[in-house]
Image 1: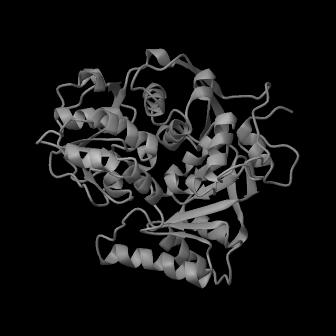
Image 2: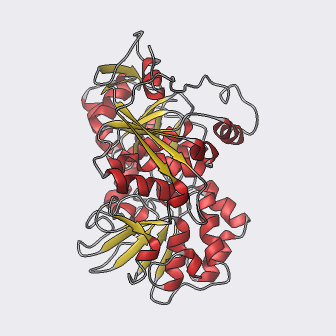
Length: 424
């Protein structure tokens, strides 16, 4: 039989010789993630089941990233629950302020995600890790608690849509624009409970950070997961994470068979794609940045699990160099992890952001989910490199959020309105 990469990974985690879309399976889990919002609920459920230990203390990951630094007593309580649980059950991978960062930037950086792995997380953007050729998906907190006990997860095998990207991208266009364009085409339910397999010659040339951005937003199309077949770019990334050749880097990888069955195949010529902006209040309400010049902004946010990596910061700094942020705009920069923060500091990027009039914040999800450190007031407008722009997502219900890549966000901060970087 012929299988997709997703079906092969799932098959490798069950005791069967074949698998098909729509089938329910009970699969072994390689990594189970929770954060300071979702893990406390899972911990409560875990303790209610009176379990004496987790299935594998090295395969449970806890990251405090949504409300750190703690904004109030309740958020402090949440992070303490994670700390106490980690100590009680000797959890190897517990990350908090000072040694961590935004979970979906942090875990690949720590070498915790490998090709062919099955990863679950009580966070919808767990689909990010498909960029490394893993099957990764979000689950509820109760499912997470059950996995901590059993080491398994119950799920339905998804159908797969194949997305084929060809052509050379224009200047200032990358993975964030490809995925926004795709969501704009198929809609927020266009890949409902399906694996989104990103392929084609353009993807094979695409840097790892851009692949992370694309897989991160699979959920915004309703996808169960996003995935890219591992290749030389994947291997080089893993080698950098492990500081050289490693047996883990050479872990068996999977790729789709030529005869694999897809529910649909979509093709895009990226040379036709301009920098994209998702307008309020859906990630599918996409328009070219150049068509939105009349939209004034109050805030620009660069960071998040979608675009908080070094290449994103470098892109923003390139636009901001020797320029000043508009006096009408608050520019907030969120490096994805503590390591990225240090790299940005050493390379001079932090100085460039401050010189331009931006504010550099600690690694945190911050305003992305309406957490803190950048909440929007009544009728305020923001452009952000985050992944969702639902009504009230970043603050007041009357506020509006536009989604873009880092270059567009930086150019908009300078202009005081949505702007294409080439306008500067």
